[in-house]
Image (cartoon, rainbow, N blue to C red):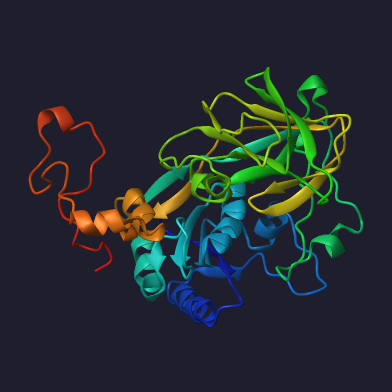
Amino acid sequence: MSVARVGLVVHEGRPEALAAARVVRDWCDTHDVRCTDIDVWRRGEQRHGAQEELDAAGDPDLIVTLGGDGTFLRGARLAAQNDALVLGVDLGRVGFLTEVPVQDVRLALDAVHEERVTAEHRMLLAMRASCPLELPEDMEALTRYGRGPLLPPPCVRPECKTGGGWGIALDATALNDVVLEKLTRDHQVSVGVYLAGRLLAAYSADALMVATPTGSTAYSFAAGGPVISPRAEALVFTPVAPHMAFNRSVVAAPDEPIALRLLERSGLAAVSLDGQLRGVLRPGEWIGVYAAPRPLRAVRLGPTDFYGRLRERMRLTDAPAAAADGEAAPLWPLSTPAPPDLEHLSLPPLRTDAYPLR
């Protein structure tokens, strides 16, 4: 795609991110491309909704994030709003989302501008609710952890001011997960969980989450959920510290919505999207989570080696047994084209030594 407008999301606490931002701005100046910093906040200021950020930036067609997975999620929130491409530049430590080493940011922008990239589609989550989400006035003071101010509650989509028994549609998406969690340490949340319109069970737990395959390596993984290929389409429901024998995840099809209704005797519950608190539910209120009709489009410079990254980031080769047993050989030889019965499968490319930007 020919880039006309760039939105830049920077982890301002990292000097290398600030240096990379200067490279991006210089590249934009050279190519006569408008570049605007977005999702910028300072202490005491309010953060803005996605559409307000995009309007101020002139509706960018490419969003570049400079940081780790948290910074990428900030950019994904904005890119999902107007179907922009998002390019993640890697300055993190254990992330799975970012694509490009920081030293290659200029080469990556050249590749995007010259259409030498592909767009990988990542499933997003959308939401309905029984009522608009709100935040209590003192919530900011209760939840500040040095990560900046809260995002505003999601707006109701204009075409869905009233939804009857179906609830109202919220103008918000999540790339990793939607989480319903307790607000105070001494009160768990009591929640009725519905899959595809049928009651599954009532849970008393610290939290309940619905994750995408992308989010399966984030909070869902820490809570004991399965690791799922980001190429798959599924919704992963996982309870966190439930007070019941059935504590397993349930993997639902992408067209099977998951609803969470706060029961009468439950405490208040916080609703978080991709780790950002966006509202509070009271007993009797509910949220419905389902696959968004439109995926996120992430820039990919070559084939994605998700399982190689999983092995590296989770240090799976450090197990004593693996070291004792020696190096594992490939399951199939990869120096020749795949035989006919394997041609339909997704397998690593024949050459793994060639980096696409060099």
